View 1 (cartoon, one colour):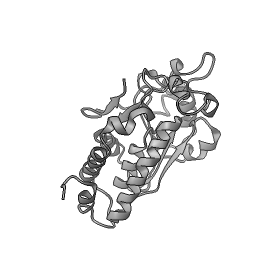
View 2: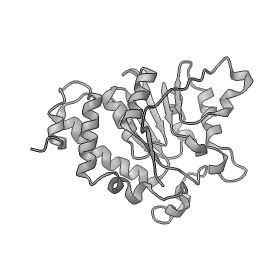
View 3: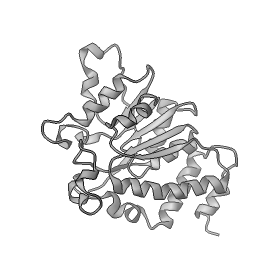
Length: 248
């Protein structure tokens, strides 16, 4: 049998234990190969091009079905290596509650849930990306069932994180991951006269519990105001080689 097949990888998992990072990487690589590669998996679901989802709206859902704040959405998939670095840097443990804002195809939330064992949530605004995430989650759940691995709950939700229905899950999270790189949550990605997603994100962060850790790809200037210097501490860390991969 193929040593890189998903079935073979399952045999390396000890039932009742969390999946180790090396085994997660091996399983994910085997699944990607089985499905024809990342280009096939992501394909038209998540690659509208030129970090502008307006051109993809007519191919999937109407503009009315997209939440109002964001009309551009750059897609960048964080590699497993970067996620592992985040887990290590935040010293994440099973008692934590992890949330990925802009979770795309859901891989990060799944990796955290099964390697750390904590509650893990992803929120994605683009319908096609969310649909792809749900398809991948079926394979993920099959992995857990077949191997008997221990994992935390993993919820993949569709919507805009600024929607008040997500307020509780945001405010009770202890580790927040957000790929806001290159200003994709900034003024250039909202309609003129509207508040940026970075502003909304900072507003939620101000209400979170002391000790909550935020992992962001770009600065949140709203949290760097002089009056907040004694409240928030900012540290930079090296995410390793080949952390995120961006679409064209």
